[in-house]
Length: 461
Image 1 (cartoon, rainbow, N blue to C red):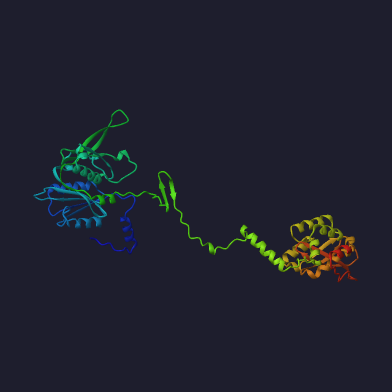
Image 2: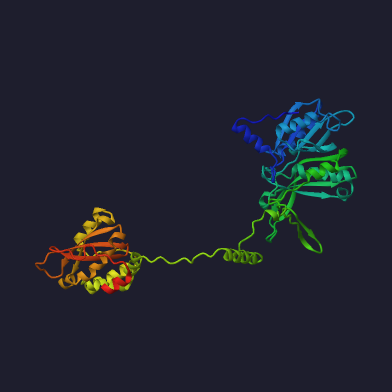
């Protein structure tokens, strides 16, 4: 047998993949070869079959003395040629005194002999012996009709087997759609007796009929012959089942642990793992454990009484809470003399948790371009002279300066130009609150003021 080596090149890999089994097989190719001795009739017949199957047939003209399909061991060379040429059908001709003009037609499965039939050829006529128009000659790629006449093709086993092999030999490529213009010939098989069949090949001539359907005439174009069935060998049942297997395009995936019953319908099995209840951690909200927790808590309360936690009161925290409120913002803005539109913008900015900066456009652009941190901002506030004088009352806010790490230098410019020289300092309690206190150049008011509680702050207010 022919040993197939592992392909190493891309061309060899493609050749192996081309020969691999597939869901939709290619056209079955036919191997035509001859034995040790042949006759002129057989040589002409093999040549005619090769011309009828041009494009899907391979012809060997050398003599093969080791091929005996019906004998044990005589099919080895035939299977070797089938594997080498990738042919699924073969036609073998031989001639002897015991079996003159003997023709063996067979099929292979997986390049092993599947079935065989042996016939004797009588009354053979070639295509050249018939006179017809050249346009009626068989064309490459056309598909023929088949007509089997006689009850023997259904009742006699040998003729039924011959019918299957002839259909497989001459049917060509299997197609889904058919062009009627390409069906231009017909093979007529007539069962003359239980072992004799007349085979002829005719062309279809279309003539006018006066209707849409044309009138057809049969013109014999050859070849023509009589087949006398001699021997045949059917495949065994196991090989037939394996060869007749069909695979769907989308095979249904098997679902595990699911079965179907006629009465109960769909039944499934569920496998649960071992549940180790001893290793499970109980939840804290299990109702059955509430009583145990209450008993343990009562025991602890009886043994030890903890003093209740008292809320820590811190003056700075109270002040911070007050400074974040809107009431402080409105009040402080009013005390510092901000115009109403600036004061309202300050309150809105505190709601957005942003710092309100009231400055000229040039100063603001300079601050944005400098890319300084919040500790380095220099802000100009516009307020009236009365607001600056009343700012001494707001200076008590400076008591929380020690609790706030971020300071901003603020320059206060009077709303009306005056000769008074005012300076100011400001601190940020959070990112949303600005507090300021004002001092004159000659005297610092409330420089070290401290308010220890909210009550003192309200009293001072």
